[in-house]
Image: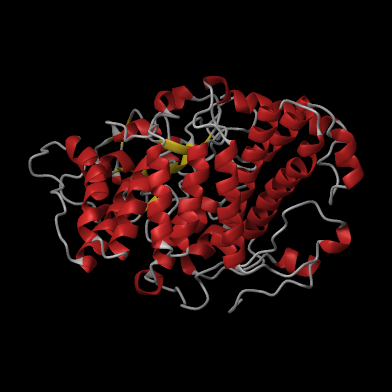
Length: 476
């Protein structure tokens, strides 16, 4: 996790000096120009562009609540100290809900840092290969931040460079244009990035991550042919494969493995760069906050014998990181396992070092299965779906009877099967709400969801007040 040492150094640099490039809002062109002199300056600036990614207490990134609490996988537990999370379950949130404001600022902080790199690194005299890689990483990171913004808010202002203060108050850019920028930038980034990073640079963006993010953007646009094409490009790299053990994707010592396409690094260094989900999701009986208590509906969605249930959710009398789990550990009788770890493996509860894999190869295969199904190439969709199910089946107590292969050639039956597989394979990996929305099922599944309103979240009122050119999402 060398990248974290870089980020911490960049943080120290920026915090130590009142002339640091991130001290100003907005950042002046002159300041940036005077900072970017050497290759080392470029690397420091790029490292700072990674800073908004982790789920840390410092970042206050509650994207997980948008994806999980608002969906049907969890309800808010906790002590009531985060009213915004309770509002998400009830769909009673407003433009003044704090979590949206924090999230908006965090993503645009990352975008601004990426634009600083992209505007200034081309002018530095340095090794061309190194420059190209830095530009590729910045393009990918900016694309990732914009994808999250468009996913959460819909249309958002699009900036592809640093602009003067009088040009910051711009209208929202249509989501289709934002996605087109993401796709173009990811294509360019893929041409600049290495297929694999050296071990000393684990966590940096790669060619596969860029191609996969482009595929995900096409998935959200329902451009099924492009999804198949870009999944094909990811697979053609021949560096990704499913891990034999599903849980290796969520263990400290088996992270950044062959299944990881884009993995956000966390470190337990007592410096605020650890994964705060280790505390926010853990039961109060396990020194946690219990803010995401698993619904019974999610537990019941697993087929009989599916081992992924016990890998994802703890229930009565099962091992829970050295404790014996009891019904009293949660109001729902179930708690999340993913992104949690034993007490003796961390020095601070809120600084877990289980990474968040934003894109796993298993999901890439399920994108392929979904796209082929929607193209009515149902027989072809069987293969990628079976790859995912076969891995789970092999870990079942009785592989002979668990998770039978899906052999249907009926489009709707296969569509239902692929959607089911996403739910159980990717549970609590921050996809569910957005899946229900893009499938047009949210109003049917989620009590309180209003079609035509809740597909997106409200723009933060603070941003509306600062920028009169912004128009609020419908219904808010």
